[in-house]
Length: 298
Image 1 (cartoon, rainbow, N blue to C red):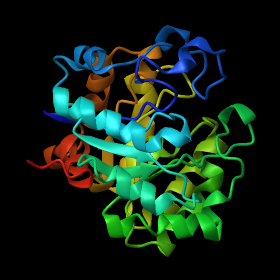
Image 2: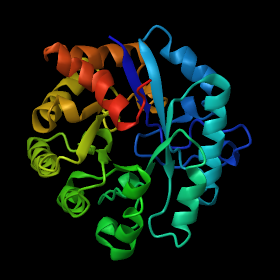
Image 3: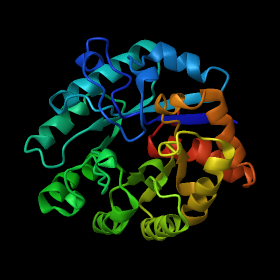
């Protein structure tokens, strides 16, 4: 079965060769030590990784360039698309509180593959898991004013939050019913205890109650540093039960997952994790929903 890959690798990977981060100190990351992939992850290596995995299209999600170069990032990825035909869609970065946001969005939309925006707003009590400066940024009126500019431009928003922020995430989705939200990494269930998983399910239910929220089955090895079928099956099954297959999409999160898995194994495990579902639902998770969300038809 053909698959569309959401390349959701957002921590200083897939960069141009002139990026200075390679020469700097190791920075603690949410997924642990990353020395084995501390290099430019360019299109040639990606195409080698996906060979024979049944991937027919891919979506690039912003990789935390210097925020001042956000437009340049989109333009550069678009140039890769022009040259290689991959990736097929782009999710760029923008700060929703930036006074120059409208102009930057307009400039990004000069790149025809742009489909959405991600600003990572996840916050956690553990500083190593924390990205945003505060847990409630998405409730800030100035931030929401910026978000309001996406839907009229036909852009979706990739929402990255932890369980403790899910009630606010659901409120955000209710407040912006015309905006499409794609929840990152199945809501990042980092607490594998029974209590933690119950809290995650309750939060996911709040989000799933909003028909404009979709969910990405990606990054499932982030906190345990492995992604076997046994590891991902419970999360995949619970997420599909809550959101329905028609609102679930798969993403590889490569090359981050390359720290503990090769691409073929990762792709095979997600196929097996949804194999019990009707064929139409499998096709939705692996292809149809991503094609619709990121406008990849044709």
